[in-house]
Length: 512
Image 1 (cartoon, rainbow, N blue to C red):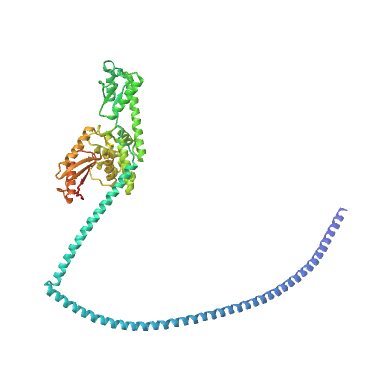
Image 2: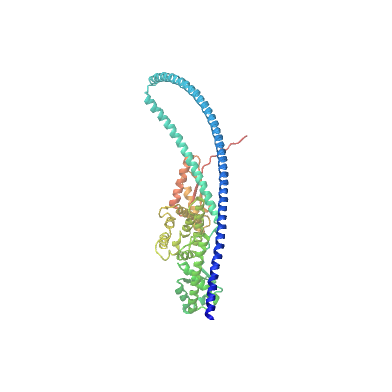
């Protein structure tokens, strides 16, 4: 039962597969035939479309070729027209050139004739001149070369005379202009640098509240005064001067320390060696701070920066240094400002001039401690702290010890003279001042031909009236020079003295 069923199933399966194959083959052949027909139709349509496109492109190409041919023909016609016009213009220019060439040839012929005629005339003139020269030589008795030499000598004399007059005039004008320019610059510098007329000097007297304080300062068996003198290096002079103690010492800084110490002790009231030592230390520290501050203040006022700190301290020490009553620090600041202003007006290095002016008297800060002049000491200090060589030259040359090699050094020297020599800058005793004026007038009055003289401008000028019947106008400059030389050799004075000689002739008559 089972095997029959299996066989029947297999037979049915084989029959089914065969029938399916036959049906599939029949359907595939029908579809393939339909696809081939469609492909043939598509090919026919493509061939028809390509033929149409080809025809259209051929027509478009023909139209484009026709259009290009028309454009080329039109452009050729235009160029032919332009060429014809250009040929006509060239032909006209050639005709004009031919006419001008003909005119030039005629002019050349005329010029040739004129040149020949001029040459003939020149020959005649030369012959005539030779005859005239021969006649002149015969009449004057000089040959041509001799006459030329004499004429040149006369012309040379006239030219030299005119040149001398012109040189004298130019020199006078240049000197006048230079004097005017220098006065303007110096006046401007002085006006812009408004310093006090007389600088403050260091005080060496300490005021006491009463005379009993003198005994306390001396102390038992003089121990207090000895302690003060030993610690400060300053001598105390306690005499009959009421309510005052005089400090005596060559070092102004030590004297200032002693002054501050005494003032602190007087205010404190406790005066004994231990307290004195403490106050001396405080005063020393205070003075050192003041020195540093004054140096920095001077640098700030003058605009001089990048100085070595030791140089700043040395500048501050100048606060306690005076010269003829003039404070040296204030003098250095003033010289720096004056030199800077003049350098600015003349177009030189303003910063360098200010720096050199501020340091020009730096040697005076330690001149009582080191041997040598303040100029030599200042040069060594500047070299030690690597200052520029131009600054060193200005310091070295500001008193004329060496030659100034830079314009800034010349300006520093002039500013130093201005600051020191202006009226009121330095103090001197009344007796020496009057004696100097009297000597000045005596030197002038002792000169031959002087009628009278007057010392004016605080001794900065001597005005001399001469006798007109003994001194002529051309002798006045020599007389002024002689008086100036006598003053230089016989008198000591700060700055310069102007010698002003006046010659006057008066005529008096009366109408009746």
